[in-house]
Image 1 (cartoon, rainbow, N blue to C red):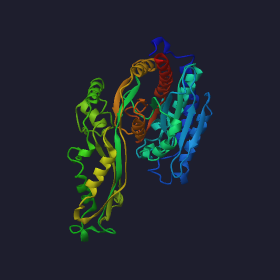
Image 2: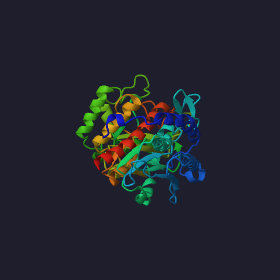
Image 3: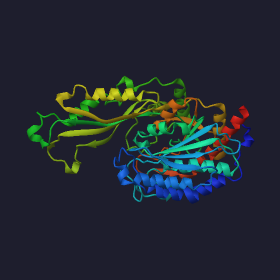
Image 4: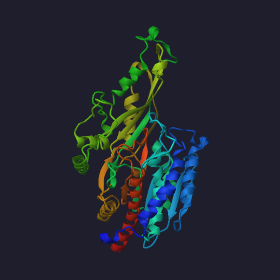
Amino acid sequence: MTDRHELHDGPGLTAHIERVWDDEIVPALFEYISIPNVSKAFDPQWDEHGHMRRAVEMVRGWCAARTIAGLTVEVHELAGLTPVIVMEIPAFGDGSDDETVLLYGHLDKQPEMTGWRDGLGPWTPVMEGTRLYGRGGADDGYAAFASVLAIEAAQAAGLSHHRCIVIIEASEESGSPDLPAHLVALRDRIGTPSLVLCLDSGCLDDQRLWVTTSLRGLAAGELRVDVLTEGVHSGGASGVVPSSFRILRHLLDRIEDSATGELLLPELHVDIPADRRAQAEATAALFPDAGNTHPWVPGVRPMVDDPAEQLLALTWRPTLSTTGVSGIPSVELAGNVLRPHTSFQLSFRLPPTCDHAAALAAIERALTADPPSGARVEFRRGHSGPGWNAPSFAPWLQAALDEASTLAFGNPSRAMGEGGTIPFMGMLGDMFPAAQFVITGVLGPDANAHGPNEYLDVPTARKVTCILSHVLHAQVQHTRAAE
């Protein structure tokens, strides 16, 4: 690793990044946030509606206009799948085209969600102080702009970087179902990355760079129970016709302890590695509220009190959330009817090293075997994605992260596990086991990705962009020193 004095701001690196963020990226994010390009799982007619293609073209055009030596930008298409933006930048300065850095982000969004406060909305960008509100700005529409700017600023400041390839996908919020086919088609162009940089994660505060060391996997599907072909008068049927809701509740008891929330299927559990336990304990000692920063209703208590156990529950233990319901009318419209069916959308988070395909199969078996009262039980549209557990940081990378974080924030970096899922990281971990991974992001404890009032903190995003430039340069210095 280079001596500390060589890791400097360069001629105007920070000023360049701050100017482009304020004058160009923020206005671009206003345009991007206003596009309702929800992910394909929430808009199966995404291609017909055209919102995703508007977002893709908007991001492609902005990136293609950057002043970066040798930059090429294209939209990679595969029939029937959401597109992927692919950017290639040859090595610069002392960098080598024999080394590849892969930078990743996505531009599809979660759906609207209710509960936005007055004056805010998912497709209405609003700047309040340093915060840019709106769906997708922080999760993670900013990633394409920040990744490209980090490369541009490094070149403008005379810093070096190896060959870079930037992948911006459009199905991440659906579990990245379209990405594997693109990766296969692009395998020769991607090559074998030695470093992967991703901006789709979170942070516990805005005082340092936070690097993600693990991500949970996912499994999801719709559990539907049918008992009748149409609704009937509850007074004339209840007591004979079983309630579809009760049967569904009974089925869920097979996989979840309703008293504790513990999941009961062994296929969904793993042994937590000792180093990840130690990391959770160290983080909890310094940030005792790290796992407990939620908009609680007064009087509600967390499922577990110990701060370290809260972090482990958020990052290494399986969970079940019911994220959608159908077949049930609103309270205002409810009549005395025994309903014909009930459906729940089930979302499971799986430990990072859990076999997601085996977990999904176990869930479906448990829910559909021997249905109570002979009800028709279906588990529809089941899908899953891998988790990810980071390899240990190489000494040069750990030093670069600490030094760049200190330069940008005044404090060295810290690491933590994340409870969310980025299927791409699991795919890449399998494809490139020797690569180093830097997974970071700007989603602070109350940034509320996927929920109402999602926001991007612009100063934090600027600093993360600066850090990317420095890490790219530090990798070249390490490579040259090792020759």
